[in-house]
Length: 359
Ligand SMILES: C=C(O[C@@H]1C=C(C(=O)O)C=C[C@H]1O)C(=O)O
Image 1 (cartoon, helix red, strand yellow):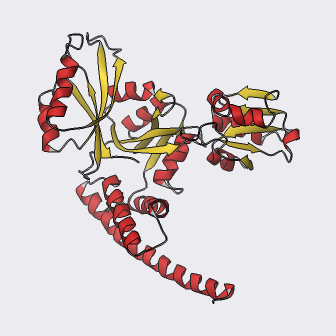
Image 2 (tube, rainbow, N blue to C red):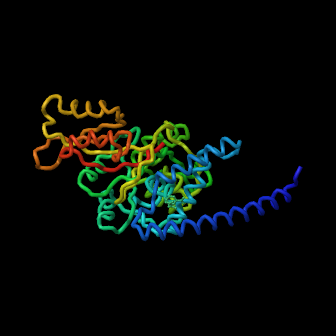
């Protein structure tokens, strides 16, 4: 049996090899960057990243390796982020403030080293992309409990930016405080929804009679709690970490299955990956006439295209269209069967993006 020292010597030797291989990988990545620069190709290729993770996961399984898919993903998403930065540093705008759940989603995809821009509205994220002040945007589009984020859908309907990726993130709340003892806590900050989602925790810990102060975001709650040792925040763990507040309890939400779907916006079209989803907006001219939506959907069914979401929104324009529909379906816009359906409805459909299906 090896001693601790032997193990550490072995680990050091392996780390040397890993570093050498990583540097070797980055040399190849630099060349990819040059090629993309010459040909105008997109830096971020989510479908290629997905294929790498799938291949490595299968390989690890087959060889009996201890790393499962989430471990491989955690390691490789960071490697991809560093690679992309090497190809061309690109700015990522997200719905802030720093420490928001959207920030956490952005970091999970773009890594710790990227150039981030925190903006205080979804509208500003779209504007920043349209004026090319950032290459990517990250915004929430729906939550499993609260439903659709209307502002995101309305902006998608008007903007030229496209959805290039999606990701689902479980939403967990942390209880963070600089207080040494629970009794020292005299007030708690959070967003109104934060309090709503953690009622059982608050009552179990006897916090019901303590001042609960709603503020505009959970990140703001963390900032305030960082300034006052007799207060606490219900916030994301990234916010607690960012503002230097120790987390006293994690996952304090009443129901643990809440997740938010975030979309990554940019200005290019992905190649087909074989695991794609497409989002479109449909303005049916005669939406009020019975059957027009049914006929439209029938065309999808005829081609065996499965829908994953349909959401109606009131149209706010003056063109006379009463409603439009936001639809997600499985497949990529460049697939023949999808072209066949969309060609029949060119005047009614706006393509919002085709991207690798998130998990
Ligand atoms: C290197 C590339 O660019 C990016 C980085 C990748 C990587 O590090 O493997 C993969 C896909 C792209 O997001 C590429 O397109 O192959």
